[in-house]
Length: 102
Picture 1 (cartoon, rainbow, N blue to C red):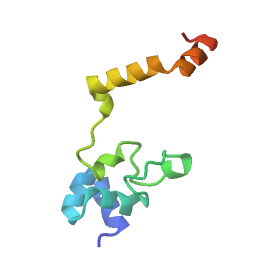
Picture 2 (tube, rainbow, N blue to C red):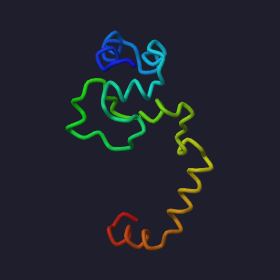
Picture 3 (tube, one colour):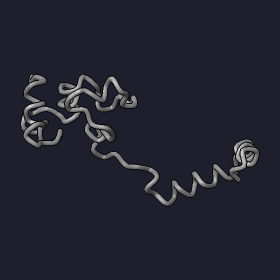
């Protein structure tokens, strides 16, 4: 099992987690966990305490464990669905009008 120093050394050499994983024979998400102590699919916002950890990526770490990640907002169908839902949400529409945003 690779250790933290091995992963960080490969990162310092300019490799990304996909390449680090390939070189060490482990999945990229596992390399990220070894380097940072944070699961790539953690879903927790990077806070001040975590931000200082070597090897920590600021965002989009889910792709290290699921390379088929897709941003649903890139779909016109999804954008239209969200637009329609927002328009149909009467309590939110009233709140926006009361706030002077609509």
